[in-house]
Length: 246
Image (cartoon, rainbow, N blue to C red; front, side, top):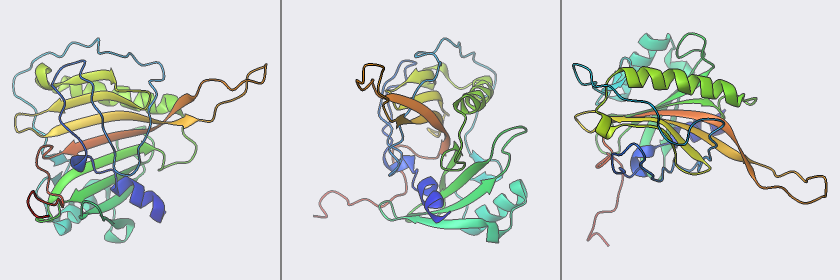
């Protein structure tokens, strides 16, 4: 369990994510902490074929449910209790030695009706110790036996939800392959520069020998779905050595 908690808490995108050009076919690299997840599209389109319609009132990314950016750890614990009826004893604590952030990690049976178990990591910043990011993970490492199609179904349900909110089309990416490892299901940025990012992640499956005994091409299998709410992509509250300090 301790290793699982560390993996989820280390999925701190704010220290490694670099804002790509806001185009529907943008390509960029996302490094997810020490995980270095890989991804396969598993039958999803390589490019977006979904039209984003503008709606009245721009969506605001302020956190996840009752947990709002800027909350202290004690306030976040109270938000977890309200949202999931979990007491503090069922919430694990973890630190990221590189970023010097801290995380509260909760395992939740259902994020929404019919969904599989997930783990939610609430990441608090280095200097202010305030909530700066929330990661929600389905599949590995939350459960051992992963059904890729179930993760795709969950991803599609969430994509439809985010698309319906009416993010600015110029700052939205939908159904875009990054490489064999990462597939962005949805990325939206609000007027304050805060981001919602939904990604399908996979790991490489060991290559099998064909009938002639030759090794086949490596295959990738979806085993995780990662949803992140990020307060500040450009200047996150993490430990960094400033220019001139060395």
